[in-house]
Image 1: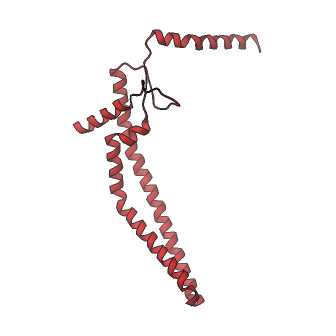
Image 2 (image 1 turned 180 degrees about the vertical axis):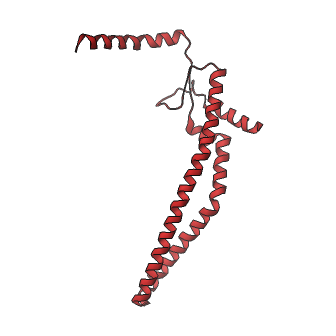
Image 3 (image 1 turned 135 degrees about the vertical axis):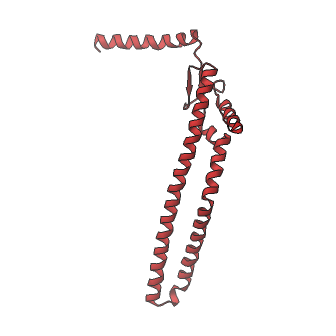
Amino acid sequence: MSPLKYLRFFALALACLAAPAAMAQSDFKVGFVNLDRILRDAAPAVRAQKKIEAEFSKRDQELARLADQLKRLQEQMEKNAVTMSDTERRNRERDLGEQSREFQRKQREFREDLNQRRNEELAAVLDRANKVVRQIAESEKFDLILQEAVFASPRIDITEKVIKALDDSKAAK
């Protein structure tokens, strides 16, 4: 190792050792927010999920009905295949294949539309949650608030405060 690399390594090691002491002296305040919990438990997130379910329930029921219909047609085909002529069997197989492809297309479109709407609704909830986190950070003088961590002590977890503020802010509107 060159002398310059040793010097850099030594400076980095010294900074790492000094950082915790500097943070302790300046009352460095850290918080943690669990976004998964907010998206699962906060009232705006629950409302958004119910809104999406209501919006897509009719299409979901229609897809379930089509799947059941396809299953019945397949069972009829298998049951009656031995008594059908070759031409009739080929025609029914072709019809069944077309209906199956149409069902798969509708199912794919449903999933894409559902995912897009879910992403839109969750983005709105996350935007509001981030605003609430900033307000809490400013009012309680946090230096850093993390949204992802391998581990966070319950002592620094402010998720419940954020959920409560989100629930209260929507009730006021």
